[in-house]
Image (tube, helix red, strand yellow):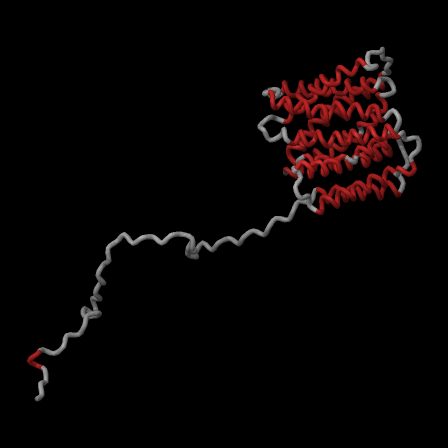
Length: 346
């Protein structure tokens, strides 16, 4: 049941997270990059705060916890959100989604450097490499045109920042603090971090259409608030590195939404890339084989002696042998003949 729930969270997280780049693209038609960043942090924090307080939970307390929350908010929210908004001004959403799929590779690399990912299994490393190959096959960057170098570099920086943020978030879970409290506090901190950036071109009047306003609302409430809480839940259940592998599913979701919603072409190359990506993700999620359990002991067999146990001292005095009632002289020496009965010969 736990594996089923985790799988459902991963599928929902990939679906919501994969649509993020579409909503960013629509929001950038009306808002500046700093406005998009602040709006999604604000709407996401309000959503999670309402859920947190409505469920009777409180925000975390203590200066050390909040110090890590602010650090995670910078690397997992404020910085990557801003880099995505700036990067997608010069590259399309498909390329952004593909470059964001490098997050699992950065996560494994940083986990190995910091010691949180000790001795990654060969199946996981192979799955990461295969998944990245599938992402490249889907996106076909050799066919892309008009992708700006600075925009691509910004999105790669966002993917690397995500990996750092996931690592910090992994150290926040398991401390008895509900994940809804952590996620609400982190987006609240991200809102406070991004608010000063509005001074850099974010205070201009906004002319936004109803459709663009809906896109901004979905980006903040669903693609940021709900998605971020699901990310925290998955980190608590699977770890930071396993959660980062969801990034490999994002191009698959983007292509599927394009085919179903926008009626885009679906080529054999894309179909093959999807299969490769799913195979890579399956390899990263293989559990190590557990040792064979020992056979159940025979309840009728006497317990085996412990060779390390000290011998028990004999505290009882020695008892005389019990005579056999059928043979009362058993065990006794036979008396010799009487002296007068001995045959004495000169």
